[in-house]
Length: 108
Image (cartoon, rainbow, N blue to C red):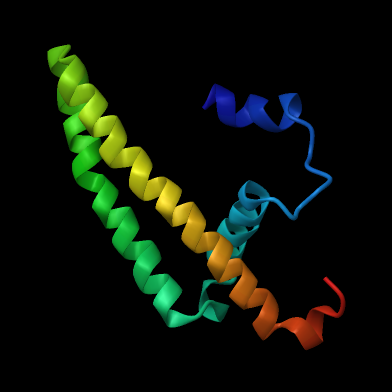
């Protein structure tokens, strides 16, 4: 919770929104605030990738509880990889959302 409060105060806002990570964040914002405007296949993938990370969270928790490095690293990988894939899907969803709303937004 402390990092969520501190993060926007420590890290400067991005000026260039053309990079992959920035577009991923913009896609996540569209996902949160305008989910009804996202194409259905993006919704399916986003929900599936979120569900795919759940076993990783369980393995991570187990590894931390047992102080087992192998389970902890396995759980981290199984949690982080679907999240990175999710962000990549959000980049794609954002690009499609921009294309779908090109006339409304003007030059973006």
